[in-house]
Every structure is written in structure tokens, then in C-alpha cells.
Length: 361
Image (cartoon, rainbow, N blue to C red):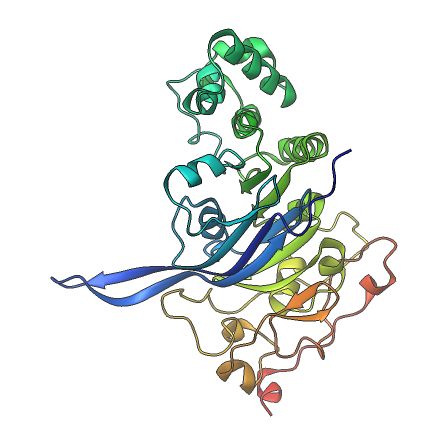
């Protein structure tokens, strides 16, 4: 019997990734794009953490920093190996990093551009095995056939090329490739956003099935909250490089505590026509990550903002067990969530938003 692992599988602390903006003949740095600006979260073994937000909020960059596809500016990315030892992925180099990449893989967003059109499935799925000297010849073919079967494809497809498959089948190929080295942790970056809705459900069910069979842990990056609700145990909401709210999925959907989360939830389609909720249309544009506003980054678009929000940056704090939020008014606001069956608190009405001239009074 396998003993449970102690502590999180992944612990990210104060992760920062800034891109310098240079101008002039001497390429002097004049500003910085704050793509990821002090992000902290953890992912427990066997769970799925959903990371959501608008395009450009920094969620993909966060995933790439975790994988070391890009080097973070600062922060710690502690990963717990199978033997229990913790290593900081942010500082690893050379052979030590290459060895750990066998345990950490990625499923990419676009199933069309993430597969080499000049390689057949045997080469695509088996590439990692060959590069890491783990299988060759007949053993390689057997392993690729096993992986294709795991993701719902026929083994005889291994001689075909990507153009012969649909979008959903190509994403299954990408998943098979990610599974080839028996990883423990997978970053799924918008893994279903390029697919039709019916195909999305198939891929999500496949990921959950593989998670149960193989004991996988996921960081699931998405912008569609209805998708995140289906697959995630916990959800972290990002806005302009920062996490503004993080909680268990049901609690975050039924009782959001940050105005940005409330706005995102108001856009989720409702399957029951009897449930009518007013769509919240945010004013203005997403803050420029190279010229972030003072105080709370969300305050120029927030209908609940007061003077304190414009001058003082909120910190991510725990307002109830395992529910973290970065908002000065989190305790006093009653925000509208999505009704959850069996949860009496999910039907709480939203407090009427004060007008901005009243809010600052």
C-alpha cells in the first residue's frame, strides 16, 4: 500500500516574471511588463487546481514559469519529488532540471500547431522516450500503442500523420505524448479552448479518467469558468498578474468574495432558464501590465471601489478556511454567485452596488 505524500506536490511562493521594455540606441530599460506579479499557490497530490482569468492576465506565463519553459524573475517553485525531497524548480539548471522534466509535462492549447506535421504518431508520441533513452525498436512501438489506447485512439494509427485527425483526436495525441514518461504533474494550458463544446466534454472526461487511473496532479489553465467548474477541485482567479481569489470550486462559485470573480461568474451560461441573473459588464479595459494603476489593480473597473482601493494595494488573505481573497471590502460585500444544488448559501442575493459617488463618501 502506497503511503500518502506529505504536503503539497507543488508550492509556488511570490512568483514574479517581468519583461523589460527597452528603447533608444543604448537599449535602456524604460519600463517593465508585470506578466506575473507575486503569485503564490499550492497544488496537492492528486488534485486539479484551476487557474482562470481574462486573456493577458498572466496565467499561461505562470504555467510556463512552473515548467521552467521561461525563467522567472524571482520567487520559489518548490516541487516534491517521489522520494519526498523538495527541490526549487526556479533555481535548477542543467541535468538536474532535465531529469525532473520527466515528472512534469504540459498539454498545449492548440492541437494543430503543437504537433509536427512531418512526424507520424509513432515519432510524436515516442519522441520523449527516445530522447530520454527509455525505449527503442519493438519496445517503443509497444509503449506508443499502449499510450494511444489509454487516450482512446487505435494503436494502428501510429503510422498516420497529424493532418489525418480531427482537433479532438489531435489533442488526445498531445495528451498521449505528455503521458509517455509517466509524469506526476501536468500543466494543461487551455487544453480544450480550441475544441467544439461536445469534444471539450470528451477531453475533460478523459483527463479525469486518467487522473484517477494514474494518480496525476493538474494545473488546469483556462478562461472558461464552466469548464473549470467541471474538472477542478480548487480555483484560483488571476487579474493582471496577481491572484485575487482562491477557494474550493463549489465555494468560489456559490459565494464569491471578489468583485472580479462575481463579474466572471455572471458570464457563465445558465442551463436552467428559470435562473435569471443580471450580466455584469465591466467598464473600461484590462489594466496595462506595463503601467499598472495604483492601489488595487482592479479598482478602475470595480463598481464597489472606495478611496482606499485607489491608494492601498490589498493583500491576499484568508477570510475563511481555505478561502483567500485580495479585496479590502471582502468581508462586507455580499456578491452574487452561481446557485449550487444542495448548497443553501449559494442562493444569497447580491447586495445592490453603490454608485461610485456614494462609495467614496
